[in-house]
Image (cartoon, rainbow, N blue to C red; front, side, top):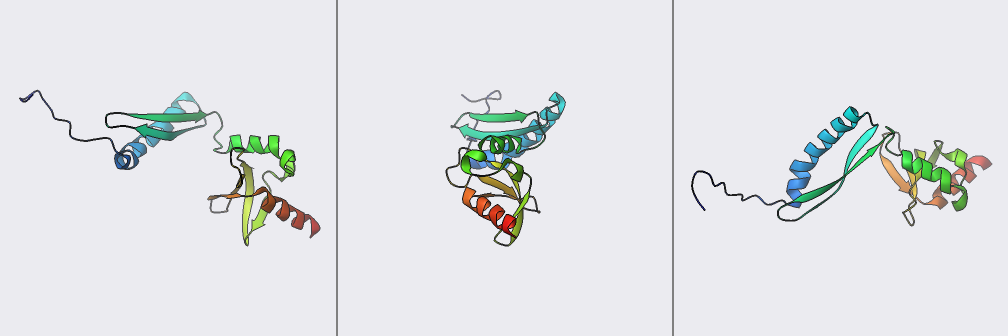
Amino acid sequence: MTGPFYLEHTMKISKNYLKVKARPILDKHVKILAEELGLGRGSVGHISFDDGSFEVKLKFTESADEYAQEAECYRQFAELVGCKVEWLGKQFLCAGEQFTLVGYRHKAAKYSILGRAPSGTMKVFTVDVLKRNFKDAAAA
């Protein structure tokens, strides 16, 4: 079909298009939506796509703390994995760098402990690293 009313659609939805163009726009609007709804935080999750469409998983939480779920998970599982609940929020050393214990990722098989560096970056650790560190701190 040709003529003034036909517009040929030549752009295909691609991984690069979603990463470079769509995700930043979605991130911006999800944050605005979370504020308007009175929620603590909104984020864009997994995006799946094919040639003509894409689906986006959106997550909204009541808490502004991005890792509130992992912190609660740590409270639930700490004693089961040989840690103490009171370690949550405390600082520990790993490879000469100071971290704050943030939470526990129950779906992670090995690196299930979340720690935040002073710069704000998140790192993952094994339970053994955490236990060893707090054991050494108690002995000192």
